Length: 111
Image 1 (cartoon, rainbow, N blue to C red):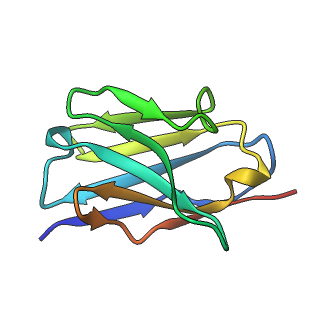
Image 2 (cartoon, helix red, strand yellow):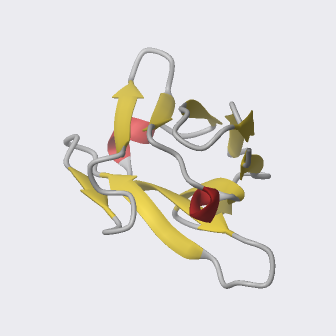
């Protein structure tokens, strides 16, 4: 059974940082594309970033230069380092592999 579990969300001031984690079981993250998406209240879910099996990363323009994806194959976990956060980054962040989604983790950027 495949499970994706996100963690690391929380409340942060503008300009602050958070690191989200997506830990997988039941599949090997280094064999699949893995993506992060976010959904703000009243808005559609939007793409944030993804990482390919060979480690190539791709970012939405809105987060490019501020967010960084990395993967720890030994822990079967992908990390999303988020820097220079602003209120527009407030959303529920979810990780996705194929048809599988995590439960999401709330990120709130507010002063």
